Length: 307
Image 1 (cartoon, helix red, strand yellow):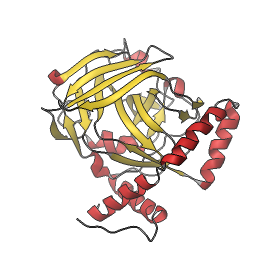
Image 2 (spheres, rainbow, N blue to C red):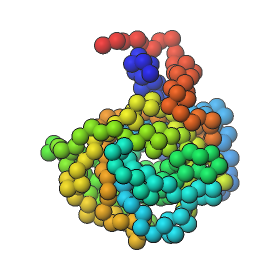
Image 3 (cartoon, rainbow, N blue to C red):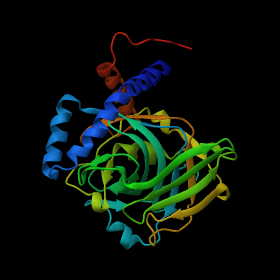
Image 4 (cartoon, one colour):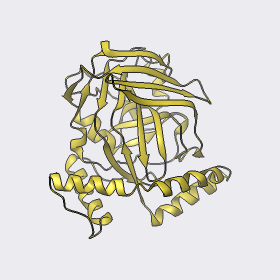
């Protein structure tokens, strides 16, 4: 993708996030949570007719820990139908194995703003052959929506996802509604930009689905992004990770991660307001989708600043 097209896409996604509208949506979600679940789904689908896209910007210094699966039978029960665990790794130079990934990040979107911890299983869709990120659980300090639960309020008792001037990522997130907790500190000083596994990070983000109690009769959905945002990330030495608590996948995973990753830059995604399947399968498909969104969402007033 040309640099000017990337900058145009970044501006497009950021312009879609209007703080006043996010605040209004946050207030409205409190009322919507009181409605029957079927009516909530109807309202979301109807709203998607006039506003089909949602901008989703993950802020710099999001962190991911990969854990090897040790209890395959237990973990496979969390997968939706027609999925099977598939050996994977976050970085291209790491031996692949059956794994789960926990991600912690700050995010601002068209409809919510806050921090999230998400727990994923990495599996292959047996119908499409696509490697997939299956979201099994998540915790957030702001409101959320998913097809299974509808609109839900903040789920955390506290949520710290931040950095320090010492070059650290500090994560301390605890659920107010379950035993979920993730607490660790990652020292970034020895991190090295390393090539990411492209099948996981590019193909996998074209096939995102829900598992566990989040399963619902939806098809896997795709994220739209510049594939080069998934080219590399900081690979953090495991000795520089102080993992105090991780209850996600407890008893079914090796308690210590085999990889740690950090993206030191923002990542800009667009997805559909309602989970919708697409035909995208490759990086080339993504670049075409980015250009189409640029054309649809941009106005003639956009600047063309080249630095």
